[in-house]
Amino acid sequence: MSHIEIVQGMKESVEGARLNRMALEEVAQTLAGTTDETMIEQTLAQMWQLPNNRFSHQYAYEARRGEKTLGIITCYPTEVLERLGWPTLQTLVGIRKWPLLSHAIRNLQTVWNLIHLKEGRKDEFHIASLAALPESRGMGIGTLLIGHAEEEARKQRFRKTSLTVKKSNYGARRLYERLGYTVVDKIDREPFYLYRMAKLL
Image (tube, rainbow, N blue to C red; front, side, top):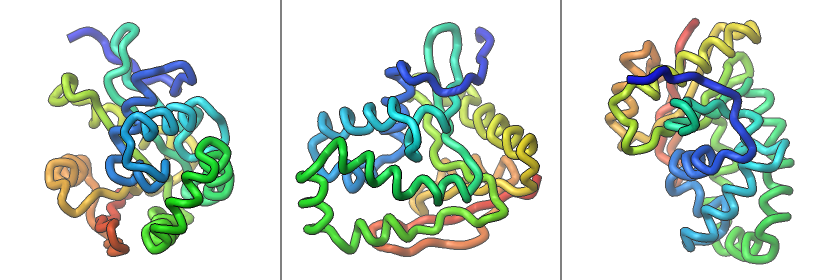
């Protein structure tokens, strides 16, 4: 296998934007305010390219082999995650305008629950998303990316990393447990049923 390197997310990375969409799964519909997959992809591609939002390339790292991106991870201190809430909403409204607002009004409880997930705690460096291309699964990309996020946490003097995982995603939960993460809490806010997992570094 060729050498895989972890690099800062790149604004022009089409694969990075696509993987960002994959990582978000159903949440992407709430964010984009539509079930139209083309519109979701376009919205999240713009979010990836723009700065100062929680889905921006500036908070992501890409696992690359040569010129190809195989996986991404988005991570930051929880305080940064929380600070990005309002700018992220402003960016989404700027991109989607009335269709997003209309969707939010029709799905007020889901939007409210998304805003109030409380994914991380103040003393944590939070891994917000992780995704690998289907053809690169089994190559250890997720493990490499999580290791990189943990190193970033150490550089910023954090002693704990955290992440959330869907309760139904047994494969991802097994990976995180193998890497030393344990379930510390759960989030039950329909339609978001998640485990909060953390690891002491």
